[in-house]
Length: 109
Image 1 (cartoon, rainbow, N blue to C red):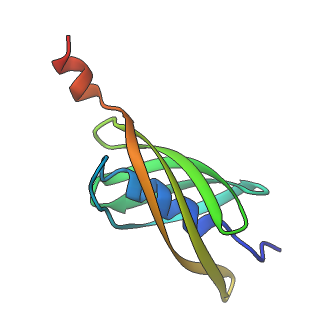
Image 2 (image 1 turned 90 degrees about the vertical axis):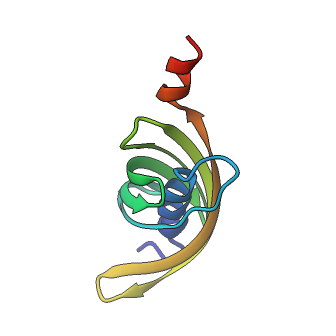
């Protein structure tokens, strides 16, 4: 069904983006497809726990997520996955940035 699944890229992009701008992050997550090319996911990484949504085509994905500190991040990634039983397992690389940080907003007031 999803031969060229962007889910690995979506999840990794979302999780990696939570590490913040200018740093390297790593994590693991799971995405659940809700429509062709669109997934909702949850992940745990160097930025903590996150939830997010992403979209992708082929190996490229983009996503937005919110971590446990309320930071909103956006990310983009590329990845590949293969079927393993009834699931897919994949790897990818991504980059992202913090779009909104509630702590920074409080400090600027």
